Image (cartoon, rainbow, N blue to C red; front, side, top):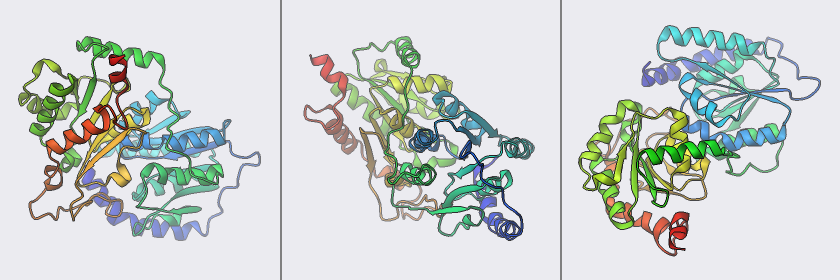
Length: 405
């Protein structure tokens, strides 16, 4: 299904639909809280694998507050592998968007299945989609919590609507919803609570061995794709190639390129511009998500466009460089201890926001992609060098010190 079409339908049909439902809701008796306290919690987040990882601090907070409660997750089928790998919830229920019949059928089955679970709390983590608020209403719970986002008219179906703050990182916005449920006086920290198993690291090491990358060499993962729905976030392949060459020449790093199968052409084009061909490996479209997770967990440094790889690396606390243009790193930048955002912040940036449902029109005189083209290779290389490679770098890569000792 076309994501842009889905957002348009959600935007123009959602408001009158939610308004009508909210009127009916006032006349219908609502479920009563469980007499023995919170037993079951349902979390809802549909769009974006990166958002799944940004939810980890909030999930960690809920698990700590209610260690005996069952926490279920409703999401899209395309996110199942990510949730399965990180193993932070008890049950995963999905909606399939590959076709309209699958979408409607899986929607009805999900609601029917979850409605029988008698949830005490439902938390809707979508910032602008009305569809998630509708589903939360269909499933029902004594307490339904979600964002009151300016202009989106979603809050009428929530028992507790939290004003969406567009000036703080999304991890903290998500944590603000969890804080209400867990009754914490302060927002949870940005710690994901994610523990990487030894077998995952072993698999990551095995992948690097298969690529001929020795354990004493710096492994740099470059993820340059952004999926077909967010092409304006792409940096030029020749610039990725030049940056890779400069890092190989200066620090003898080895570069592993990753990306979706449908974006493998971007990696092929990038590799065609690279001088240091022996120092790079193309794994685009070749890794199932579990292997991709293991690779990122075993990397020394990740450089990525503004996409899920930034948040996967942040959750694993792997040094990550994110490249930003139409989106704001204030909201969606790296959030680990060693993240670096590259962002020129033109006068028209950001143009992708949660107030316009991520539906935007480029207003720059130079046309689409001007904000990403404003990111220069030399400036990016120098920032990476100062942040990760210099002797006094604030986030100097650990392997550099180990190799020198």
